[in-house]
Amino acid sequence: MSWGTELWDQFDNLEKHTQWGIDILEKYIKFVKERTEIELSYAKQLRNLSKKYQPKKNSKEEEEYRYTACKAFLSTLNEMNDYAGQHEVISENMTSQITVELARYVQELKQERKSHFHDGRKAQQHIETCWKQLESSKRRFERDCKEADRAQQYFEKMDADINVTKADVEKARQQAQMRHQMAEDSKADYSSILQKFNHEQHEYYHTHIPNIFQKIQEMEERRIVRIGESVKTYAELDRQVIPIIGKCLDGIVKAAESIDPKNDSQLAIEAYKSGFEPPGDIEFEDYTQPMKRTVSDNSLSNSRGEGKSELKFGGKSKGKLWPFIKKNKGATPEDFSNLPPEQRRKKLQQKVDELNKEIQKEMDQRDAITKMKDVYLKNPQMGDPASLDHKLAEVSQNIEKLRLEAQKFEAWLAEAEGRLPARSEQARRQSGMYDAQSPPAVNSCAQDRESPDGSYTEERSQESEGKVLAADFDDEFDDEETLPAIGTCKALYTFEGQNEGTISVVEGETLYVIEEDKGDGWTRIRRNGDEEGYVPTSYVEVYLDKNAKGAKTYI
Image (cartoon, rainbow, N blue to C red; front, side, top):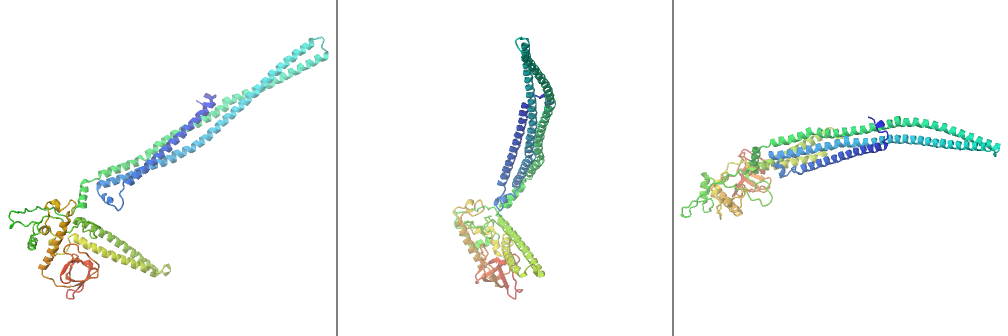
């Protein structure tokens, strides 16, 4: 099966067929190119989708990803990002291994095809030239033969005519002989050209054209093989990323299997637990006997003595809300006192950890500067040691500030964890006392006393309760025996005693110490002989009398 023998007379059709083959190849290249663009676009959209739903750093949304279900979703986003990367790999490989290679091959194919058909046309032109020469010699031979016949006939006519002179007859005879010789020459020339043409024609149809068409056939078959290889590569490039895509999908399945509803429920408890006790039963108030009615926690008619008696003898707790929680109407207090106890403890612990990390960072920087200074001292040519003194002092000052800040939050943390001094106001923090001292309410229903979020809903009740607490607090101190001063102290910085049992101090203020720190982080002080309370030990510098085991300093 050869185009040279089977299609020897289909030069024009072969030219059209090979051009069609190149068009098919270019169409396939365009198809692969559009596929790569789709893959890139798909990968970009997947990455944008994954980025869109990624949690924002340092936001509440990032905290939500502690839950296993959210972690699984985050893993899905990360796996989809890797999944998108595999589609980018497909696009890159198809571009480099198919599109670019085929584009280069098409250019080479066009040049080769052009060369082959140029040779074919050159052979056609040569055989056409030979044919024209043959036709020309044939016509000349025919013409010379006719001229010779006419000259012979004329000679014979002149020779038969008795009236013609002998000279005219001789002239006619010579003319006839000359024409006959020209006919013989034309015949020989025609015979030679015919023989040559037959040889060229045989070479054309049995050698030149078969060779050219065979090369064109091989070229076309290479093009077909190349398309087949490209189609196979197209599939293989897709198949290469299937294992990695499978791993991405396996990662999503594994993330889904790691979801633990019990763990998420426990995290919800840790996130929202307030530390409050559920409210107790409301006592019945018998208004039919005004003189003997039971004192309720919604009445202010109870005497302070009765309230204290109920406190001292462990009055029944009604489970009311934490009495120090205030409704947040503005900025969050520095000590997070607006939060429920458990949440406040977590926030304070988090703040302490952050400060400790900052302290460690500053200490590392100080150590580095110190080492550099030592190097400068040993090798003065490397730098001036004095140039580092300012930076070293600045870092040391930052460390001291951070330590004071950490001590402040540690004191609040100790308070939140219940590591307070064993004093009478601890008992007043129990719910039973506050039940006995609650202000009268217009409505005694539970929804009037608290809201679902754990904060008071009636500002008037908060204000009234605060006044009653303050009054009872003062009375209890009045009932207690006045403690003697055991030393003095100086406030290192301002402390706002917002909680019951504490006292506010101003930085630089001098006060009397009436009860030493017992290891719980609190010191009891007095101002002007009548105002007493507790302050964090880290907020004051204590100077005990010489008969009290010497002076101690808490910083």
